[in-house]
Length: 155
Image 1 (spheres, one colour):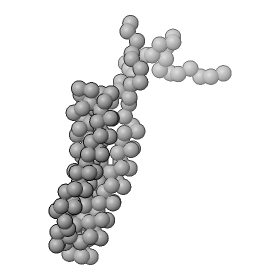
Image 2 (cartoon, one colour):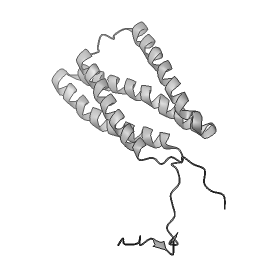
Image 3 (tube, helix red, strand yellow):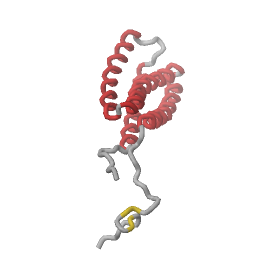
Image 4 (cartoon, one colour):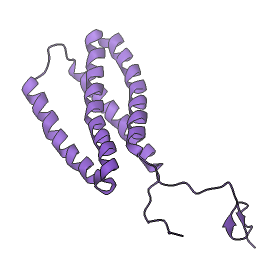
């Protein structure tokens, strides 16, 4: 014999308990949480780089962090603004933006070249660590958002 749900009375939900709807706009929340998590981790890495290689190491790690945050942040901001006018097209626009950014960032880095002060190992480490932390937090936060798949019934 199964125990009835204590929140259900006579086949209906008890007063005061309402079903939650979809997450209104998850993009800014994802951007905020990813940036905060990556900032904490890169702070520790920059201190280590500063101790081991000096200011150039710390700046290189921070530069790698900044490029990754800029790269991923643009997509989340576009997703945020696009979802207001076209919620179903936001993910498609997000993907197109990603492809444009890959080409754009590659072109910028190719034409600017490598600055003399850049410590390649710390730049690479800062960028990779930021990507890994960002992606892990992004997947976790996105998995917690609520998406409405079907229209609500009209009473």
